[in-house]
Amino acid sequence: MGDEASIDQTSVGSPEKEVATDTVLETTIVGQTNLTGVKKTYLQELKPWSPLNTESNYLGLLLRPWPMIVYPATLYSFLTLSAMLAWYLCIYSTYASVFQGPPYNMSTGVSGLINIPASIGCFIGAYCGGGLTDKYVAYRARKNDGLFEPETRLPALILSFFLVPVGLLMYTTCLIGILKERYGLGIDHQTSWAVPFIGTAFVAFGVTAVPAITMTYGTLPPYPASILIVVIDSYLPVAGEALLLINGLKTISLGFGFSYGVIPWVSGSGYQCAFGTMAGIHSGIMLLGVPLYYFGKTIRRKTANWKVIAW
Image (tube, rainbow, N blue to C red; front, side):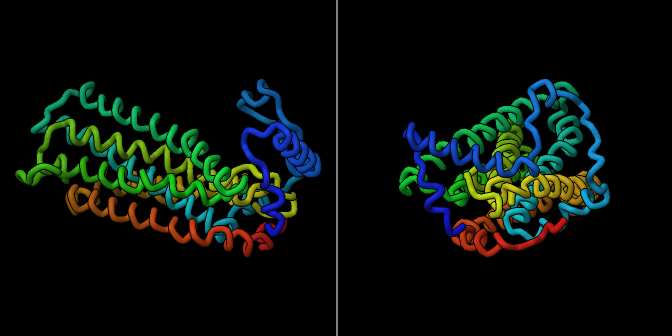
């Protein structure tokens, strides 16, 4: 990491520097041939199967990703991804019983139209967490004399920090006036169907924006192969194990847990309490990105020599 400044002194829009960057990247990839393997063609990538790796131990491959949870970037990505999918699951586990009953009395087809604002939110979130964030990162790199810092992605989470809790509350509370309590804020107070529908769009925005930012925490810098760079950008050589661990833990823990327990939770505590708690938990998880933003570079330097995966 000490060579970070000299390695990353490349800026967008300079042909000479882009050629130099490509040369370093090519050198790095060639040096890692035994690690990365041969690049597949487009048609090979479309195959639903791949040949078995008979040279690796299956048990070792199964256990290899687990130590990656000790890296702060991995843990933060796991928490944010799991939380976003958990909130989304909670909405989709309850909306049918809500909108098909009184006072909305929607048919199955009409209540399913909640997927329209959700799809819009997903598309906008994907762009904001992907292309728009990349443009912001490039702008910050130019302002920083061409030096890229993975932590410059994290400010892009500010929008999701506000929109997702608002969406959860709109799905379950009335933001205009307090009516007879029944179902959270938007639904608990029997507001117009448009309020929870828009709230769902805000939550869907975070479902695509937040993972796109936290799971690509950094970029693809031409660092030496000997330097650990976790989650794609911060620890590139072990990004595969990190992403596998994040998705595995997400599915096992919050993915299954919330889909299994959301109905009893809502039935026992009420929608307003349940979704209000979700909004608070989301805000707390997102705030964990603040110390990563200010101290992430120091953390990456200190964890660069951790031999977490030794086999």
